[in-house]
Image 1 (tube, one colour):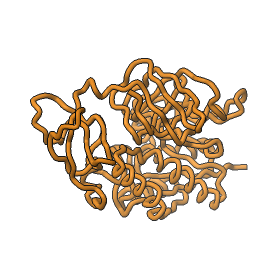
Image 2 (image 1 turned 120 degrees about the horizontal axis):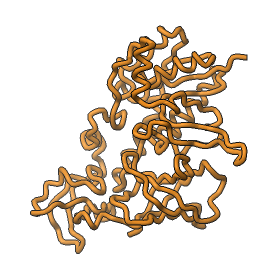
Image 3 (image 1 turned 90 degrees about the horizontal axis):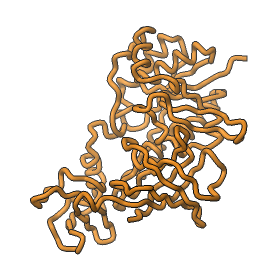
Image 4 (image 1 turned 180 degrees about the horizontal axis):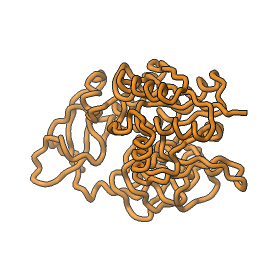
Length: 352
């Protein structure tokens, strides 16, 4: 019996080639574009029509799924509130868990699908010995997106196909040209989908209530100048501070209680570890003893050797072998065993 798969189509080259590959593997493919945010970013009319053109060329059904309300409630509001509280959020992690692999899976089941698929660079496999579905890095380490996917559950992983697991971006481009896909030369999307220009400050201007100017201070609390509002800054930031200090200075910490931003030199940005909440484990059911692995604190960062420790309150402590720069509240810390995601959580406290 032919297996039915609903593919999330963004109108880009990755999901478009995924549609072709799934067809080649014998799946019955249904293309779906999720309209998420008022015609910007990944939901532009151009992207929707590009996805439709690919679906038409391949002869597969195509639907537009309107999820603007859910996206606003689950992702946009989270993003804004985290910035207002002095944290640096990662909306892609929340979007993947709640929208692209949760609500999307529910909709796919309504269409009678056995699986959902995406153009993510990552790999899902079932481990007989562990009796669990595992999440691994994709073959293209530069494009790997497993960091954003660490919150996926066993039930979600069970129903996910990632056709690009074993391909590099260069191979995806070449194959798309070979198969004459209309988006083969289309430029990749960058940054956060609902902030296509990459300027979070401009986006956050629409949500200024409760966010007022305050003081830049040094480590001793001495006032150095005025900031625009804490949600315009992130730990580790150097540019755009408007401070003439005669030396390179950075945002060291953000204090929402006093509406202050602490400024320091680069060596003061380094931390020994963090405490993380909202833990999701993929490679195991429960963390019962310390495990040594490699931790990633941002998508663009490298992995750092570390040990993850269980805590009584369901949180975990992560201690790096050597101090790491710009460990930031609100970001995800994801722990790997080589190319396998053990699990991760949201950074709640930084350990100096």
